[in-house]
Length: 150
Image (cartoon, rainbow, N blue to C red; front, side, top):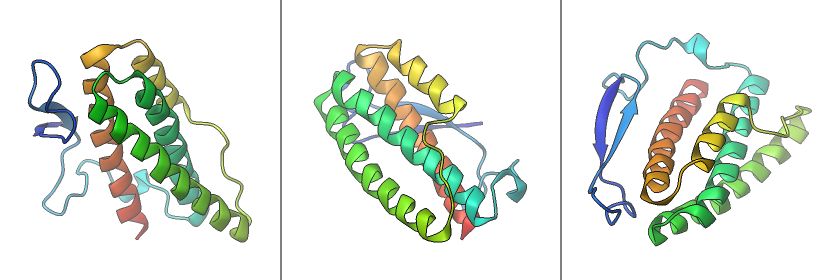
């Protein structure tokens, strides 16, 4: 995996850091993950909506934790913005799924439960850095999911 230094807004004031090191999958020049074929992402509407719903629910749940547990005020604000934006997107996805007769999952998957548990064990600046690392990784994965669907 490539390591990037992400100079993230709201994280620069964390103690002992100006950047957050984030490990991301290898990407090619178009931003698509290399080492992953399109078979790694669902191509049908139900599979895509299921993955998007899992991701969105996890985003809200994990960001709710950060909105109260983060040490840095800007990380808390960012987390609350993620709760608000992803709650709205999740509701829109639910409406679309209903119209298409697709039943979406009602709880997060095992991978996101592990992330939640990991974050619950952390505190202070360590929590803030890990939360922001997960945000970058999570959003990169979601971009790739939506690109593959498009």
